[in-house]
Image (cartoon, rainbow, N blue to C red; front, top):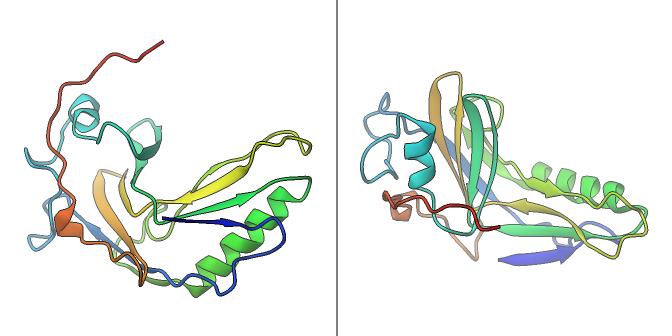
Length: 170
């Protein structure tokens, strides 16, 4: 996983991503299925199959996105952090080769962002581009794989097995 400090401008050369999104909800029989015990039917079953670390998630109601692993991190600090991250994201998005048969919001190339509120913060603001994204929207479930020449994504290598949920640590 590479990290680019984009405070002074987008990475050069721009990383070339190959991004592929496809349905994994059983409607397409040829689709790889990352879930060892089958497609989860409840939020608890889904959460129990996530890796214990190395994932990001955004969920609202019955829709959501879970990023697993990291293909790339963009980082910026200072008063121009929003502009720097936006320009870097736009450059990477424009250079990506995206095959998105899903066509729903959240499929294709996505990033999870954490932005410092204060322009004077020394904490870096980041956009993480996950290597895999599982998404659910409108009753459909899909997988997105993000590959670079240095780290090809192998969707068949992603297997998620049930593990007991542990209580949050306080």
